Length: 133
Ligand code: ZN
Image (cartoon, rainbow, N blue to C red):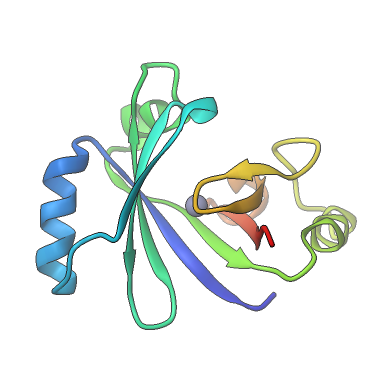
């Protein structure tokens, strides 16, 4: 694992949270991106070495809507940047972590992404991501 690429935070109102995090971090988000397949809008803030990703549901069936119903707004996942996502997925499967899908898929921010279930990681959803070159 290389580093924490970003921390994903589930929010109810993307505009309100964009303003809040702009105040907190002292600078505005640098992009907004919709991931239609996941029914979410995302926005990104750069911090020194990693990012904050705000996630807002666009439909009731979105995983983010389900998360907020259950737990309220808050940290949704931690994403680690990896150089070879296929290899890292295989390593973690072999270590007994529970994958959420079969293989990496395209996520926000020009990344291939893969998730491991929080029940196998002390309650924290883990994302692996690899920059698409
Ligand atoms: Zn993420």
